[in-house]
Amino acid sequence: MKSEQTPFEGGPMDGRVLPVLVGPTGHPPKTYRIPVPDAAGGPPTVHVYHREPRGHSRRLGLPQGWKYRYDPEGKAADGRLKWPWSKPDTGPDATPGRKPDDTDG
Image (cartoon, rainbow, N blue to C red; front, side):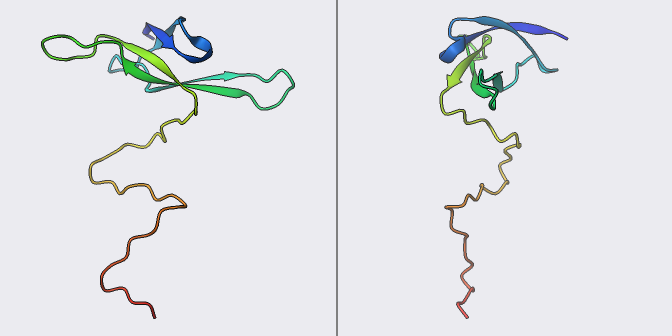
């Protein structure tokens, strides 16, 4: 497996450079999770990092490597593909849409 030296910014891994495995496209994963075990034996704390381009080329604007930036809220991507024709997520506070011909009966 091929790996790439990737820097981390922010959080407990600030300033460290780790070898991260790259996929078949040559890109590291979009989200990198680091579980830290609890000293008291409780559930582990998970630190979440998101991939960002390290820089861009002048002519074509292509990414010149990657870096990971710390996400203090720990919101990870849901892992689903985002297609243009996909419906938006409906959360518990979202109101369902109604058709014009719906009536309260």
